[in-house]
Image 1 (tube, rainbow, N blue to C red):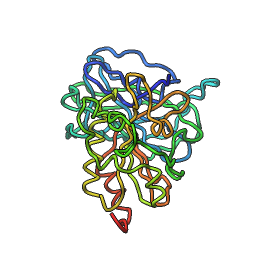
Image 2: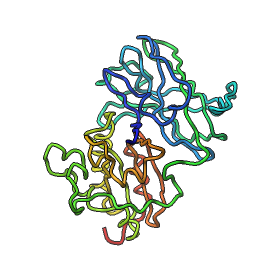
Image 3: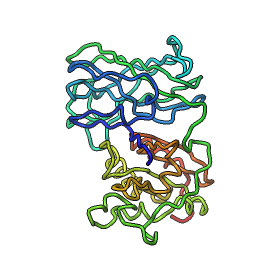
Image 4: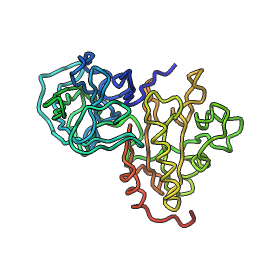
Length: 322
């Protein structure tokens, strides 16, 4: 049975982010924080060397509250590999900006303590370039309203090459389930149909990735399980893609790939496994933009801003026949 690592589960009241990220699972662990102590948890997956990376970190307090809004500082230090650990060697630094779950407040001002109902998201630094594979320590510094200067650290794993499909690589021409798939349970097409309702967002379930690539159509593909997601991110990000589909139907086809074929039996859909399952582990949610030539243009993990995805879609030429 595959072991799933679902990304960035900032749940309330149980905070389980550390069990859900690919970034630090094999590196040094982090103790459970005291009530007023800030703790950092990795919310990124499949980081690799040589190309600009997005690094996302969730900040949690021991009482179950979160640190939200504003921006914080990341300082990266190389700490070697599992076989050959080293003393921290200073690397890049970055400003990380708060990225809210869609439908939750973006906030104003600097970092502050919030209940998960008041703010739920991660801090993301863009354009981070790692020059070596192995483990990188991330020191997070934040000036939190009401708490003052706070520091926390965690560790991310960085590979020589991406394990998952990545920008500049060919898209995998997979036959994901659609409304036309024979004998496919509706819940395997979209977990939101598990209660017996019709498959929602039918426009997200008409195309296969293989058909889009063969037809030379750009495609925006979201891999998620809105009902069975460990985090509260999958439903909101899938709904975001639905909204983009309504606005940019002339730029791309839009596809939702459900993770689970059978949740109770822990059976993963083949398309999700082809794209995301490696060495018995799967991370989600993911969003991929595939160009008309079948090459991956961009990808996002965990959370993403609607405006950044919209900008990527607007950069595509209108399709000859939408």
